[in-house]
Length: 209
Image (tube, rainbow, N blue to C red; front, side, top):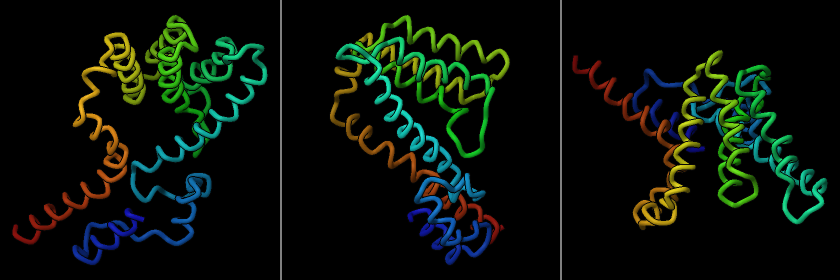
């Protein structure tokens, strides 16, 4: 709704160099996180990530339920976690399968973070996390995308902060905790607000120049 409101406001105030208002059907498809499957473009560029996140979370819950049912111990089997989460990550990293609107080709990004969390919680060994990360890194040879570098560097930073206990010491400061608590909101709003601020500046230059 904020994106639609921002587009409407900038259209009324600026009148030029603004995006068209989305249709009600487009908004409804965004609310249901299925707009790519219906052929709509994202209202804001960063919104494509939300569809992938929701899909991954749903699949994560479903697959984890299967792993828990198939495991004969209190904790999920590390082998099954690797089969259900690690192997899809290794296969998705080179871009071997892609379906528009589905999280198949970005699975490795989420899986790397999940494996780092599982290692931190003791669910899997470090070598298993390293195996998944190494396979993703190897795919850089054939598919060196910036997203892959970002995912690997983020995972490495998580491992470093966990080993150095930075998560429970340095990052425990109140100001950093506050920024962390609002970081997702800032991520969602930075394009909505930022591009419109730049549009104001751009149009001001046109009017005065």
